Image (tube, rainbow, N blue to C red):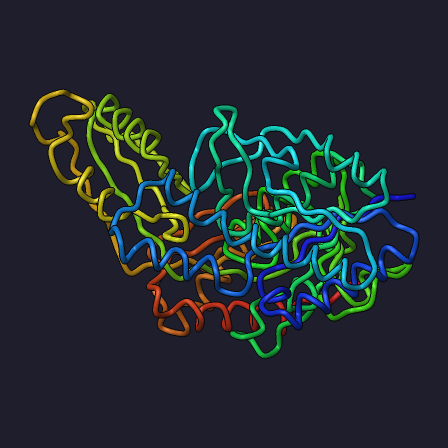
Length: 421
C-alpha cells in the first residue's frame, strides 16, 4: 500500500469534537487503502499559552527549558488522537519527535532537521497501525529535546514524508489551501490552485502562515508533492488543485506575474556600523545566542568602516530583553573585560514588511516601481526595499501593513493579473 502523510494544525485538533473528526478522516484514508502517518500540532492556542506561562516566570526564559515546556503541547495532541482512532476501531500508536527519529541540530527554539531515522514508524506501519507523531519537535545529536520554531509541524510532516517515500504529504488546516493574500485582510483573496516550490517558500519566508519555509525546502529537495487543504474537505481526488493548493515543481502561471502577497507585522531591525572585525564579533554574538536574522545587508563605507542591517522576526525571539542588554551594554563574554562594544548599534522598532511573490517578477525594475508607487498613493512610505529572484519586499511602519497588503493585492492581482488555469 502507498504511504500518505497527513498533518493537522492546532485549530483542527483544538477540542475533543475536532479530534474525533480528524480521527474519522484518518480512518477514511486508511479505508481507501493507504498506510497513514499523521503529524499533529498542539491543541488550539496551547503553544501560545505555554509561552505566556514561561514569560510570567521569566522575561528571558532559558531556551533549553523553553523547548522542554513547549514540546509538551504536541504530546498531548498525539495521545488523544491515538485514543480517538482506537475508539473508531482503528489501531494507532503515538510517537514523540525523538521516538519517530527526527534528528536536529543543537539549536533550541528554532532547530533544523538534519536527518530522519523513521525505523520505528516503518515497523508500526508494516503492522497495519496508524502512526501519530508529535510535530514541531525532535532530538539533537546530544540527546536534547528541541523544537523547530513556528510552523515546525509542517517541517516534521514533509521530512517524514520524504523519509518514508510517501505518495504525497497533506497539510490540513482551517483554510482551503494557500490564498493570494490573507482572506481576513483582503476580502477579494483567491485560492491558488497550484504553486511552485520556490513561490511557496518565498511566501512562507515573507510571512504567509499556511506552509512552513523549511518544510517546502524538504519537499523541493525530495520531489514530494504537498497538498494544502481544509480539514473538513474530502480526501484528495484525481485533481487535488480543484479544492486545495498543490505545491510542486512547476505551476501553470505566466512568468512575471504575482502569485500572492504576504506580510509580517512585527520586525526588529538591527543596524550597526564599525570595523569588519567588530561586525564579525557581532555575528558571533548573534550565533551564540541563537538569534536568527531574516535578511542581512552589509555595505562598505571606506576608511575601514562597514555597516550592516539585519531583520529579526519577533516570532521566535523569546528573550528580546537579553538581546538588547547584550547589544547595548558591556560585552564581557567576548572581550573578558568590562568595556563597551565599539560598534554603533541601534535597534529599530515599529516596523513590518509586505511582499509580492512570483516567478520572474524581477526581470526588470517595473514591478519594484509599480509597487512603490501603489504604496505611495496610499500615503505609505517605504523605509527599505529588498528583492530576490521571486520576491519584492517593502519595509514599512507596522501599523500600515494591512493597508499595504490590500493596495498591492488590488494593483498586482485584482486589476492587472489574468489568472491562468
